[in-house]
Amino acid sequence: MLRAHRAATDEGHMWRRRFPYEQYNKWSRDPAQKRHRTVALEKWGPKFVEAELSDRALGSSARINIGETRGVVVGFIRDWLVWREQHQINWAMLAVIMAFAVGIAAIGASIFLN
Image (tube, rainbow, N blue to C red; front, side, top):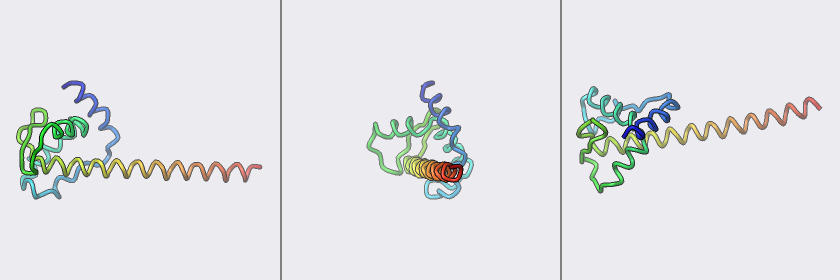
């Protein structure tokens, strides 16, 4: 359990934006509850959470425990995982674009300096 928490914490430093749990009203209307569940998901990280879900065939309205947080709705967890995956893809795309821009700038500088 400590290993999963440490891995999630190590991953967590790259996430500048947080999951917009306020927008996901389908699973709960209580903002404090959604915030608490989001914090639990962030604490454990997507790898641990996906492992918890993969062990079971559950419907979206089913509830599971994430760490010490009881009764987290599976649909909310899936929304969080999708958001995280999309956000990660956006970071990867930004890295590719930045690498391309640096490469073009390096070529331009070498042409200009010669």
